Amino acid sequence: MENALRPLIVLGGSVVLTLLVVWVADVLLRRADLRHPETPLWGLLRRCRVPLRLVMLAGLLRGAYRETAWQIIQDHEVGIGRTLTLVLIGASAWLIVRIASAVVEATYARYAATTRHADRLRRVRTQVTLIMRIVTAVVGVVAVAAMLLTFPDFRAVGTSMLASAGLIGIVAGVAAQSTLSNMFAGFQIAFGDMVRIGDTVVVDGEWGVVEEVTLTFLTVRTWDERRLTMPVSYFTSKPFENWSRGGAQITGTVYFHLDHAAPVALMRERLRELLEKTSAWDGRAWSLVVTDTTPSTMVVRAVVTARNADDVWTLRCEVREQLIAWLYEHHPYALPRVATTTAPDRDRDLVPEDDRAPVRDDDRRPPRSDERPAAPGPGGGHRAHADARARRDDAPAAGRGTPRRFPRPRG
Image 1 (cartoon, rainbow, N blue to C red):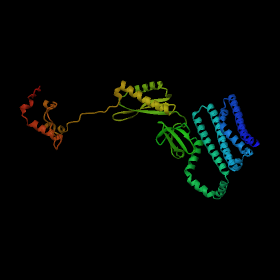
Image 2: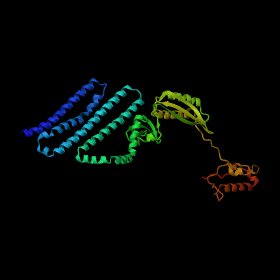
Image 3: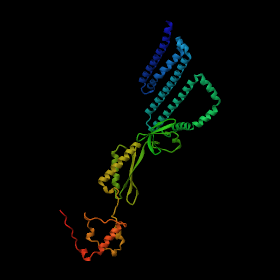
Image 4: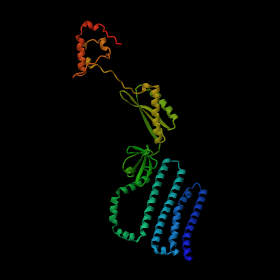
């Protein structure tokens, strides 16, 4: 009877004690969260319930599993103990990461609630994200190392590797040169305030917003929802545009190529009316001036300001569309025009003016439908013109002035 009850007491007692302790901790955290709603730490710590259960259960079973007196446990005592140790190490690492995440997120939430500067908020968010990744990586590496040390074979391998640690370090440094450079570049970006999550940047001719920053790579979301993944070393070794640096407000320009008679003063008044009606304009500045001229057109530049890059793009498109529609409706002469003229008769221009034959009315008439044009020969159209001129010169003088009768149409 005792042999049957002892395993139940050990296993059941461990499970019951674990559930009881976790329940009490959850109740205390819930009450603390209700009493202090301005502090999100207590609510975030409630997410640690699952790793806390694993840590307590693995710890209780690791210390009391031998007391079950089961034959199968005694036969596999070493394997069971090592398994419980591995579970305890992994659950402890998970619990530490969850606690660190709760503390960091609570600190960031309180800072975000008290500050009104968007650029500072993005900088702190970038630093917090990288700090959490560093903590997770360090805890993971330590946990894996502790798990490996539980195996005696790995201890012997580790002792032999210490003798050649210098050579291995050199080889590893050369092999992981790019990885290490990206990692140090990540630290430089995080704490050097070069680029932050939410910044509007232009890299390799692509405009986008920084969406994610890690220790090795950085993700930029473009305007058409594409993702550009770039190594963080790019931002420390090459120039790039950061439109959010020093403030998110930005100035945009719109260019118009118009006729010289365009009403610039009226366009300026129309631009002011458009800006006062739109919400994308932040009211800081605007202007409309003539910046350049060409023999056929002049260049008119409109300058507008907005709160961020998205608003300035919308504002530029709206100003361009509204002003062109207004010019087309009220001042169509202001739109650019292409000057054209009739090409001169080349064969007639080659003949001296004194020798030119007078142009008769018959020559100006359009050809009839039943007349066939002469097929151009080797000389092309020029020979056809020459033959027609020869026939005209050989015609009797009396017939030149007589009117020509046309046959009556049949049917």
